[in-house]
Image (cartoon, rainbow, N blue to C red; front, side, top):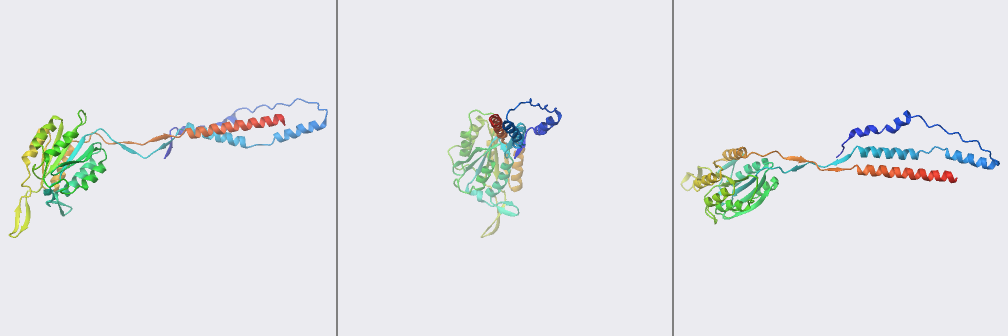
Length: 334
């Protein structure tokens, strides 16, 4: 859209008319009497005067257009672009999500439908990412190995899309919790004033990887990385077998002691999510513990356009002066 910075400048548009009516008219000079010996010469001068006396409107039109363009330039026209969201100073927040085979257990419920643990995480964590305006968000997927799926970025939509596209077994069937933490530690800058936070979600114990979870947590604490750990999975589930329905604990392999130790060593907290409601509350609580630094700022790019009407005004004024000069020369030699 186009807007004018100084709209009051348009009040100067009628100024030439006001000057025309307010200032006194120039006195007409009476031509001196001439004695012309030949009647033909006198007749030629009279015809030239009659020709020069014909009204010409184009100089007035050019002058009016030049004045209009000049006033528009003074009003400072500007082209305003669409608003752009600027990144703000917040946190570096890395999500680490377990993709081991046990995450396929269907012990969570969303909108009346039983879903597996990964699907519940994708829905709830996706909304959490959406609300983290001002933070740089990253995504680590881990199973038998840990992968940096998305580096820290302000593009929250991309992080959500890649989280939704994650699949069970993509990183292997085992669980490498220590490697996931170690990968985040490797990505930490040497010196930064921005708070570094990691949210690690798993439903099992460390069964793979080269770094132990406790050792990785100690390294993270030295680098100032705070880790929130989430143990996901129901404690009771009814399964059908040859002997009828049986109650089992689908989270028997969850190593809560290690997850608690990781959080304690890094200044974070350990949370237990047994169902969808608890998982939702956990992310809400983390959102309160790590509030956004500030809301995103909007910037609208601006481009000044005054040079165009100013150039047009100068061109019209030059054309008017040239035309009047040529007319004067013709009259002198006429």
